[in-house]
Amino acid sequence: MVNDTFMANCSLNGKVALITGGATGLGLGIARCMHAAGATVILVGRRSEKLDEACTCLGGDAYRYQFDITDWEAHEQFAKKVLDDFGQLDILVNNAGIQYKATFQDVRLEDMSSTFDVHVKAGFALTRAFLPSMMERKAGSVIFISSMAGFIGLTNQISYAAAKSAIMGLVRTFSNEVSHCGIRFNAVVPGWFETPMMLKAMGNDPKRQEKVLNRTAMHRFGQPEDIGWAAVYLSSEASKFVTGTSLVVDGGALSGF
Image (tube, rainbow, N blue to C red; front, side, top):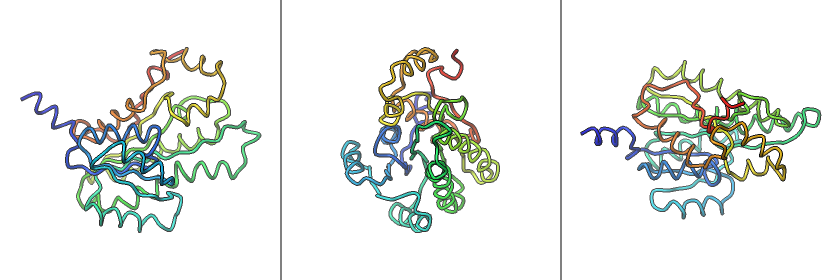
């Protein structure tokens, strides 16, 4: 009986999950775990070939939409299309991101704007587009992927850090305004993970990698599925009383020295 209760609380059977930036990196890791937990997964991105590859990798109950989340005029229409096709959306994961690596002197205002457009404005706009249907059903889980850059100062990543910090403000305010309707809002805060974005940010910088590993208690980089299972938890009945929080998944880096 205990085992049945555990499985029921952690299952995503019958749920529909949409993941932006879901074709690669952390997004694909989240998709894999949600798919394994029983959800129908919808991957959203700009690169058609990557979306096709990811859906093939996942197999059945995996679908894709090629969509630019910074197309401000199209969010309502996109949400309507998804709801018409699937009938409901239970889980929204705002994962898509970009990163500019530059000193504060070299960051252009357009770089700062582009970073906020993808991480903050698009996540806000897409969430707002899907909220009426979730509020009508009085159920849903919205997850934003933040970053350690929202907690600690990372050299040459000022626009990224500012955007990822803003995400946590979105989560808290959405939760305060909407969670009484039965919808939960949470952030997942990754440490350093083996993804194309992180490897690009690290570049060929062994000293930076050594610094990261030395402050990480588990002394290794995370795998995308480590974030994926955290997202499954925050989407399932196991976390039904969790909202407005930021779940750090970092191998002990935030508490390291």
